[in-house]
Structure formats: C-alpha cells, structure tokens
Image 1 (spheres, rainbow, N blue to C red):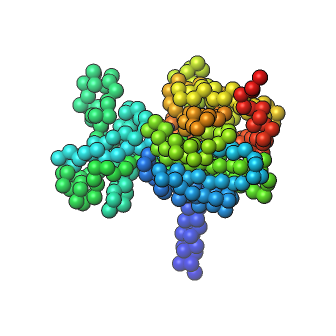
Image 2 (cartoon, rainbow, N blue to C red):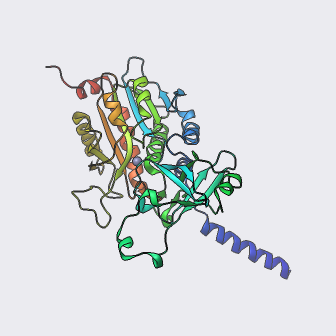
Image 3 (cartoon, helix red, strand yellow):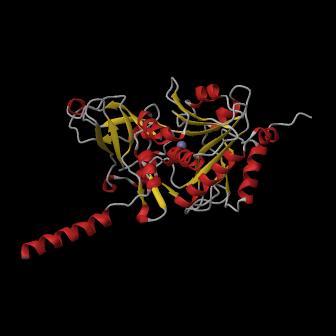
Length: 386
Ligand SMILES: [Zn+2]
C-alpha cells in the first residue's frame, strides 16, 4: 500500500514537471517549429523544402523544384486569371567550414550578413557528411587576458574560431568527421519565450514567410481564386538574392508579393529615424530598402485594404539589406512588386523574436489581398497608358 502511494506520488510529480517543462504548441506553432528548426543555410535548403512541401502539398494543385532548388507551387484559379506570386526564402544566415587549424579549431566562411560581435561564445551545429551533426562553440578570450584596447574593439571574423573539442586537425577530421565545406547554423530551436506570444527562433528570416504561405493556403481551402496563385520558396537569398532569378523568370508573374521579416526599432539604442515599427504593432509594409522601391500603386492599395479592415499596419525603411522582390520586379518585362514583413527583433543573430499577433494579422492581410487581386484590380495597379 505504501509502495503504491509512493509510486503514485512519483507519477504525479513527473506529470507536473513534464507539464511545466514541455512547451505546449498549437497546430500553427508546431508548423512554425518544424519550419524554423529545419537545417537550411544558403545552398543547403533541402530539409526546409521537404518540410514546406509536406505542409503545402494537400493545399495546392502542383509542386515542382527547379534546377537550383527553388520550390514552385501553384493553386489554380480561372484559366485566363492573372498570375499572382507569393515568395519567401527558405535559406537562413549560416556559415561554412573554411579550414581546420593544426590544433583542431575551425575557421569559417559566413554565408549571409553576420556582425561578428553577435557570435562570441555562441553555440553552432555543424552538419558533417558522415557523422551527423556536431556541436561547436565560437571561442573567445577571457576578459582576464584582454587589454583595455582589445576590450574596446570589435573582433573580426578572421580572429574568431569554432571549438568542437578536437585535439588536432586529424582528430577533427577522423573522430568528428568535420571537413572543409561542411555547413553550419546556430544551435537554437523554436520556443515560446516564457510561454508568451513572443516566439523565438534562429531562422525567422525568412521561415516566417513560408509559415504565412501555409496559413494563407489553409484559409483559402475550398475558395475560388480570382488569380492563379504561385507560391515560391527560394534558395540562396541571403548571399545577395541568388536563387530567386530562375524562379522569377519561370513563373513570370503579373504581380508579386515578397513575404519577409520586418526590422523593428523598438529596442534600446534605435531611434525612429533609423528603424520604424514595433513588435505587436502589425505587419510592416516596406516603403524602401536598398534593393527595392516597391510599386507605389500596389503599396498604397495594400495600405487602403488594411485601413478598410481596421488592421494595424506599420511601415519600414531599410537603408541596408535586400529582398527577393527586387529581382522579381525586374524579371522578364517587369511586374508590380511589394514587400510585407512580420516585425522581427534581432535578425541575423542566434535568437530572433516575433509576436504571434503580427503573424496572424499578416496572414489575414495576405489572404485578403489574394482574394482581391483579379484581372480588373491588376489593370488598376499597372502603369497607365494615357
Ligand atoms: Zn536576412
């Protein structure tokens, strides 16, 4: 009897603990976790493509991958309807093993834009060809050894190295199976920050765009479309928009929306003239970024639709960066293109944050736009012929 009670107590305690420790995810959060946890630095997007295709397959009419790896899916509307393209990139910022020092430390090539300062002492995952994933740490000098001058300086990528616990180059290759050319991502998984509506992942840029497409497709299930909807997941966006080109040429859209992250200016040290928008303030319509001045009529139409629906919308100006939409705009004989982003804090670092409300609003906005863009609307958005 006593033993039974003891066992019962242990079971109850275990249940309580597992409830506290395990995060409870709804269906959308599970999809977000699958997408953001998938390993996908530029040039290594197959795992992301597999997850994306798994989620959209039941919701579209056709799916293919082009020679570079872009996923191109179609949900058909009427035959003569215009081609509307939604695009988001599958890759995330990452690294590649460049060389192995004689002492077994790895040197790396950044793939995409990294500020070296955010790397020190962070953990990474290295995908080897034979031994699966190996964990590594960006090593740094202890403060005890730093001179005053060194403390004030930013340490460059050339001085940073990855420690995998190997004792020599031979050990790194033989025991760990690490080779130059192996791909690397931050070792961080999706989580709800303190069980709140703020969600953490290493790869919101741009898995959030893919997640928006999945949710938009769910909301469009059983609806007749006034357009032929192309959903494109691109490769190699981070190293200067390399992947989108063949997809933009092949789809040749009449009009397109790039789904991206937006950069917030709501953390200490950022002034409004530097970055606009806050977490939880609604989707961000791009007015400018270094690669793209979005189509003016299309941009204003989106703003009007948002106002009509009483949605909170924000805007963003980005002096740096680049988006796939810039390439779509100039492909073939050109198309009106806009970019809309889910506000994100700390992009291009190990931990990016988004707010669930912004995500849901973005899905609502994009679904509404898909339902409204027909032949007549396209005519109003194209440059007029006087
Ligand atoms: Zn990016």
